Length: 256
Image (cartoon, rainbow, N blue to C red; front, side):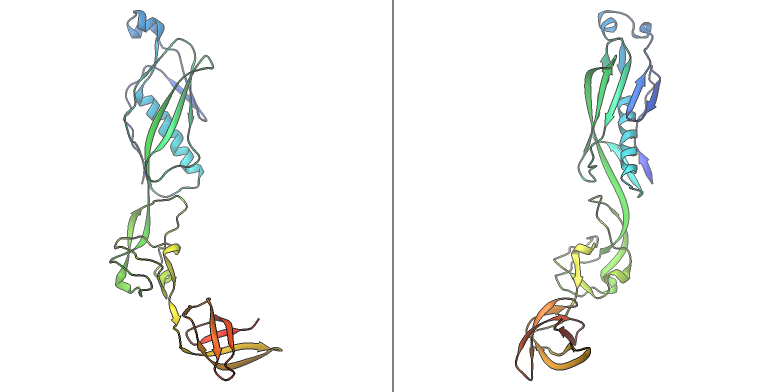
């Protein structure tokens, strides 16, 4: 759904587009009815033209970032016509490098007459990008197990261009929230972590490698841990305290 919302009015000048520049052919003076103002400023760039040039350039800039998701671009506030003196009119459109997905993005349209800067118009646009993601169906607390009914696939509005949302239920298997998640929150990698698999005083098996031979010993966890965490453990037989890496709910690897 690529929607560029415009209200194009009839204009008296013909434009040719090249890159970020828009060239406008000189108008017929009689079309402005004569008079002092018409003689001094016989040309006009309409609000509709400014919107057309700016929104087209913003659309191109969005595509250049690699954005392929459905989106909507709308003018946040109305702009005005601009009167200009005689001469060749060129409109140069500049879009900021960072296009905002929340708030507004300013687009600058600089007007030149005979290659000399005349005036600048700034238009503000709202850019909404849409995606599909897994969202929470209820409030979830930190480290709370996520059940099948706690999430669902839904259409969302993207907050940040670089955010990657989780879409596959397999991506949340065995994972829990890192913080409180309110209902309707889209799931990303940053809000999930592996579930705790070992608690303090949990009996575990210590595994080490000595000269290429795997050695196992009974031990006790002195810290809670998730798969991949480094935790303190104690060898039950020797009483020695060691650091090890959690392999699973029953095993901790110690040594190099």
